[in-house]
Length: 514
Image 1 (cartoon, rainbow, N blue to C red):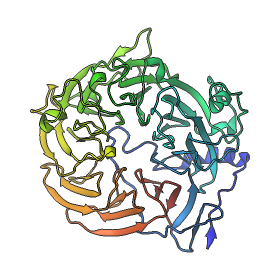
Image 2 (cartoon, rainbow, N blue to C red):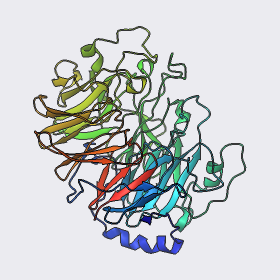
Image 3 (cartoon, rainbow, N blue to C red):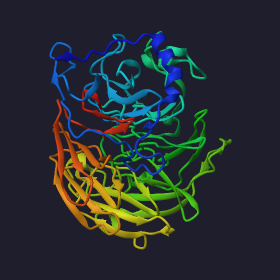
């Protein structure tokens, strides 16, 4: 047995790797494909099995047997909802602070960890106090749930405190790059003396606090920013207040657009979503060129899919934010026939629908799940395929097919080789014909499924909260290739990059590859 220890990489080693990182290829720098959000990958040579090892009671790490096929394992916090991204020799993932890396920073906090891709060495962390201004706006022990988007040496994410941030992927190891230089106070929190940043701390380039727009998230702020030219498109995670009775500031935006170089506000939505939000808003945005128009797509907390005109990618911030122009809306409620309530139904047992996964755009088709609240054990949901070339209020005309056997789901679909793969929250993986919606097969994976499928190398990867990573053959006939038991549950989506499969459990990140 060999113990996996997270040794400290000297600062000089970090700097030495900077020049080598340009040679890496086939990174996975964002969640899913860059614009479509489709959860597929062109990586090959990925495993169907590996040895998960045994938990070491002394170190809390994982002991791997020889021949495990695991390159390295890194210790995370105690709960991990963030999907790993891989870019420029770095692996970034959101987690919590249950296993502190810094004795100055203890207790329940939000954490983004950065590891060296070849070795798994811990490099630096963004470590932030809890949001306290909004009750239940930053759920206990949930950590940072946003999946970053990386471009060059910049990483963009939404913090547990409802802040859009731009980070230097080298952290503080190469100094404190501006214009933001108050990382010490940011780590310490309001009312506490600032800390002295060290090379293991994150280097924040800029931050935009969405509280300035009266945004109040519910449970978590977890959008994965969409990078488009010089712009970032962000879901604000605006939601109901803690009693679930109403939205405090219904006029606050659900979608904002920022300049990626400065963090200045460029635009916001004007879709009127606020009063009808059922619970929270946790979907990220996608974009595609459809019928000669470049459109953005947003699945909202009112059970509606919105399409809007994307801004020119070099648009600059003005004195007042621009308003995004809505092109069409598809209301998931009329077909579900459950939300005619006035006022809207916000309670824990609400039968209303929302969109939690990301809309996926393939060709001129949009695939998205409208769902009741799965985390409150509501059971209904349906997957739809829509024609993205429609305009206006298109509840009827845009619908190409629907499939209600998926039930409630927090997942994003994978569309590959004429098939759609989508998990239901309560343990079933569904494979459907992408053109007709006819089911091909259903696999009993075992509840609960919070993450999504990854389709790569002719395989479908799916993790469950019951400590299992399923590997199935991609195709019209069901075939299980692997059932890998890990030491903890899996709550996010596997990632493939540079010939390696990255799988995050609650407490550990595995890099699997020969």
